Amino acid sequence: MAKKRPQTKAKHPQTTGGVGAVGADGQVPVVGAREPCPCGSGRRYKACHGRAAAHAATELVQRPFEGLPSEGDWVALRELVPAATALLTLKDDLPEGVPSVTLATVLPMAWPALRRDDGTVLLGLQNDTSSGDISRDLADTLQRALVAEPGTPVQGRRAPADGPRLQDLLAPEGAFEPVVHSGFEFWVPDAENATPDVAASLERANAAAVPTVKLTGVDCAYWCETTEKNHLRWVMPYPEEQLLDALARLHAAGRSDLGDGTRLVGSFRAHGLTAPVWDLPSSVSAEDVEKPAAEFAERLTGALASDAPLTPDERRARGGLTNRQVTLN
Image (cartoon, rainbow, N blue to C red; front, side):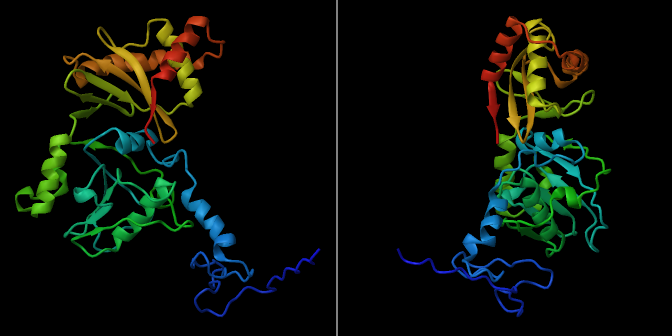
């Protein structure tokens, strides 16, 4: 049997300061997958520090908006609401020349971010992201938008695995108050003077927008109008299993509706939260459902407090709700 070649390890990391050297801050820089790892281990980067970097870049964060003000509204704007904006409050002072930062569900041409001519920053929420952590990708885009030249969009890229997340950049006490729009005219201050590409993108987006209204009496609930019926989509902050049990208790007792002709039909699962969905008659407006939604919230609070085993009828109701659950992310 051939003798195994003894493995040798560098006693000291490379610190020469050239390409492939460990930085003064101790961080191992990114190099080609087949190049020697800058840490001095003697292994290729992909088999050493590159493995952890790749894992960090692709690992799915189940609740990317956890810890942000109004997590449920972040989920709704990411997945359910066509046209909405919300002012963002940063922990640090805004850079000179940046009067405000606004989150937008969608931006023209699907830009990840845009710095307008007047210096204001718009950050797009519904764009595809390159890693498993939407919060980190958005934070990277936001940081680049803050220093972009006025009048230019910011393109997407893979965020550094050790970069900040939105939770690191946004003030935790800052209010998050979405404003739902009927269309996307907020893209440009003067739509008549928009470029042909932006004007065409605006027309397409407006044509596809589903009329949506945010309820005022309960948190994170959105009424929307479709061709045949209306719906209420309500992102709730409770653990999924506990919420499904509570909904099943109400459903089996005939107390899960929001009034005559309404019906709890299932739920969406998105970014670690669950959003029950009700079918509403086309005649039921957002204003009409405000009071029934508030009353349902009270019934749900009571059902959530119960820890009794589900009855057979409740188990059947839970099975039906689970079978009609759709995962959005």
